[in-house]
Image (cartoon, rainbow, N blue to C red; front, side, top):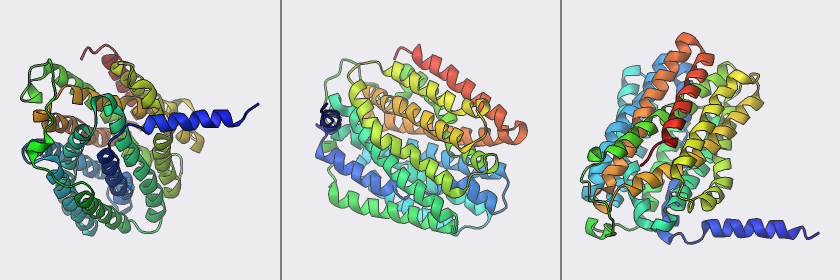
Amino acid sequence: MNITKPFSSTLALYKNAYSGLSQSTWLLSAVMLVNRSGTMVLPFMTIYLTAMGFSLFQAGIVVGLFGAGAICGGYLGGKFTDTWGFHCIQLFTLSGGGLLFIVLGLMKSYSLICLFTFILSLVNDAFRPANNTAIAHYSKEENRTRSYSLNRLAINLGWAIGGTLGGFIASFNYHLLFWIDGITNLVAAFLLHYLLKSKPVGEQQIKVKTDRPLVRSPFQDRQYLLFIFFVILYATCFFQLFSTLPVFYKNRLQLSEFFIGMLMGLNGIIIVVVEMLVIFRLETKNKMMLFISTGVLLTALSYVIFNLLPHHPLTAVISVILVTFGEMFAMPFMNTFWTSRSVPENRGQYAGLYTMAWSLAQVAGPIGGTWIAGHYGFNILWWVTGGVCLITCILFRTFKG
């Protein structure tokens, strides 16, 4: 038996999955890797604030303010991207966000923490529409889903690094998390400036043929607005991963900060190893809503499992695996859908509304999740979250976009 054949086949599959992507797509992903390797503040924000003496609900408010600022940042980032170009907006938001992370870490009073959390999130999340528009610009239509997946791979590899190191660092000094998050933002801005040179806005617009009349604003696209509503439902549930789940891990499962960081890292590692292969197999099948609804269903199972299995570290591992495969099926094809509804002239605004959907969920998720957990307990929270995901799964499955 030739044992090298399966290895050669797997190697060829990986090679095919990563082939055909532009050099600029790779460089943009490299910038994202550097940026996200410092993502340490948000995953540990609830634990950090409760350790400072604030209540769980107060911590949920602060995490929710990340989302509130992101809603404004998503809208402004989309508008400014279509006006000034994605390169300029990415550069400004990375630099500004880096400085603001450092400032936020110096704040001690609850009111100032809330204020600077909102400002930081507004600036930081104005980056996302510009970045999504850049990915669409640097990719071809036939490999656009994989281009977004490569960017997600960089984000999640950075998340694996940042989450793992963040858990270790948080175990003895929470304040370092803010400095590392800020410095990696600034380094990413430096790399973006020198690796991907700016072009005039007009040169960033690639004219493409489309049979669909130009919709000047995504707010006039009724099908897209319905899709955005479904995304908000899914994302509200997904964001429990970064707000209520870390507290549940620590208080109910009695897991250490280091183990929680390892769980966050596992999410990123699975995506790095598996997602590009999955998307390579699926991107030509033209079944976006089937794949999205499957991902939402897996997310539902990832939460309900805490009410079905014993409270054990292995249960947390299984939950992370389920939610990770859920986002691998759902998120890349969500990106493909919003891109398909837009044209270069309004792509920043479409990206902005998509960003706003996630940002709104980032408000509703932590606030709603911590409120339910505080008043009715975590068991009820997992049933509610699973139920909302199940309904959303059905809505996506029957959606005709």
